[in-house]
Image (tube, rainbow over all chains, first blue to last red; front, side):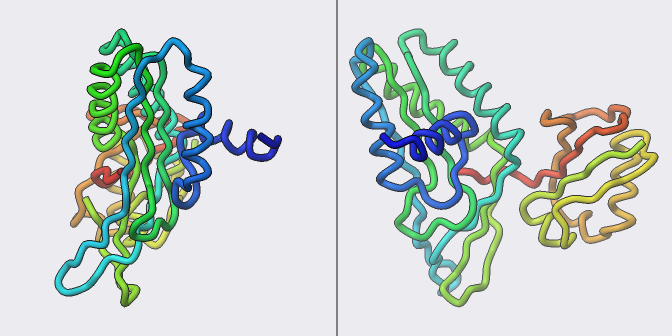
Length: 153
Length: 77
């Protein structure tokens, strides 16, 4: 891995946010690192994707995310602590959330939980996603094909 | 004393700003009135306050350099 990509990945891991979609490249780098976690017997991944909903006859072409970066860091750190306390078999948790424009069909949330065994990997991943939805200070507006938009709650 | 106020989500849109500085505000309650004077449309939206990256449910006193945010309901994922 070259130094630039390594630095970018480090920033994502530390701050949880990336500008634009979570690309296959970024996901691939996290997947590659799974091989180093030889104490884990199971990894559970959740990918959140932008859906091309149709609302009042208008189709969503993208979502624009905004976030309170400093507080995302505080809250995501807390989510990781909560999960590690609640699920003793969990070894690590990675969270990446998009800011800015993410087109329909692209990935805006990546969660990877590694655990000694499958049950806690799956349960902890599910719990982490619920906490992310509830606790992370992130906002989104749906952008329609005619460039009008609507804030989502 | 001066504090920094951040506006997020739909509130950044309706106020037309992401950030505004306020001087001589004693508390969150005081600040709320000042914001509503500047941006009356804010009263039509649900939001919570955070103070220095922590959500608050009471009305703490404010100090110089504090960072307050107006946060509509979260919609991540």
